[in-house]
Amino acid sequence: MKLDLIVLTDYCVKVNIEPSFVLLLNEEGLIEVHLIENTQYLLLSQLKDLERYTRMYYDLSINMEGIDVIHHLLDRMKSMQAEISHLKKRLRLYEAE
Image 1 (tube, rainbow, N blue to C red):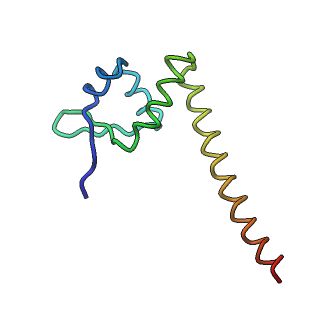
Image 2: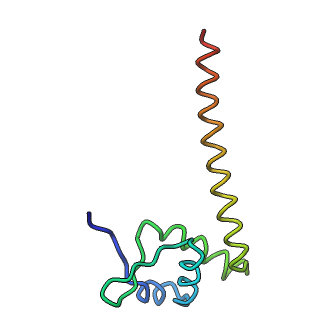
Image 3: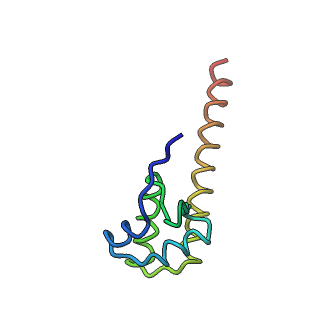
């Protein structure tokens, strides 16, 4: 399986952010940084989340703890929406009878 990767430092230079910010996100478990042959890489699939965290941190001045809380709340909301959708489907089965 081939992973789509981007070099961390290249990304940071392009979007004008500090690599240390991304490494903090990695330490918090919000972003996954891969180390291959002494080079740090990001998964392309995580760039959307990274951009969201970057806006929170740099544009809205939300600290790392706040970003972590928002991340967990959004995950919880997504989980609850999936549960509601599942329950609605089950309810439709009973209504059809």
